[in-house]
Image 1: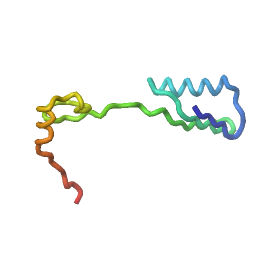
Image 2 (image 1 turned 180 degrees about the vertical axis):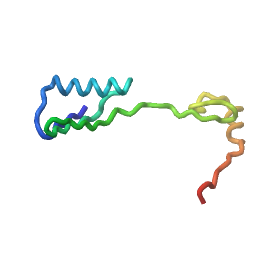
Image 3 (image 1 turned 90 degrees about the vertical axis):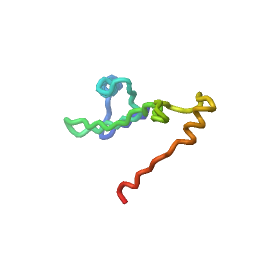
Image 4 (image 1 turned 135 degrees about the vertical axis):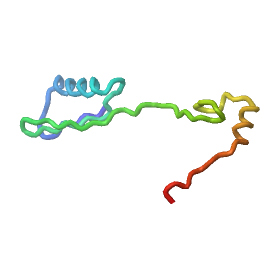
Length: 91
């Protein structure tokens, strides 16, 4: 985690409170970078969160799948032979 305090200094306890606040408002996410800008009585926070890993799921030949690596040869052939449609939207 990268933390930058701009325009002054803060105690670690206060920095931890900001991190806790951000993570509380973003469940199951962790702070990746945090910029704390001190401006008189105001504090501006800008931060990024760690990316959430996800698996792409597609509908192929009537099945919802992430990958086809567990398919048998017949199902792979069915996917290979299917008509793939495209959209020329926006042209």
